[in-house]
Image (cartoon, rainbow, N blue to C red):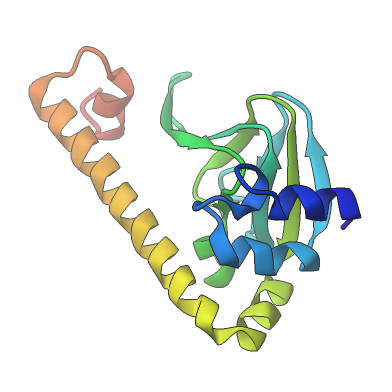
Length: 168
């Protein structure tokens, strides 16, 4: 990682020092390698083996789940400070959604083995990992609840909700 990237990560108000990534992102960043993804490019896709985590340094990416019949279920956006793919990488699973750059994205990719080494050296970070995993589970439950409610109420706005619930 370059000195320039390290400066962006530790700078206040930008980079990985923001609340989203916090101390965990700062600890992981030196172990990773810098990636640049052009708008429309993918950081990872649904079903890809989760070989590590992505730390967003600059730019914006969107996380989404492809739906059938040219529809998609939007999960959200990720900006500087976001740590993507952590639960999947730690559990040796595949990524559960696609992540695509909305604008040029600068990211740091940290292989799972290196993430594990950092966590062994800094066990106090394990609570941050647990908090992040709980937050993701909560977000998934909210998405499921939303899709269920939309399907029951005949949501005209979210055809993808009806389709995901198996009603179309």
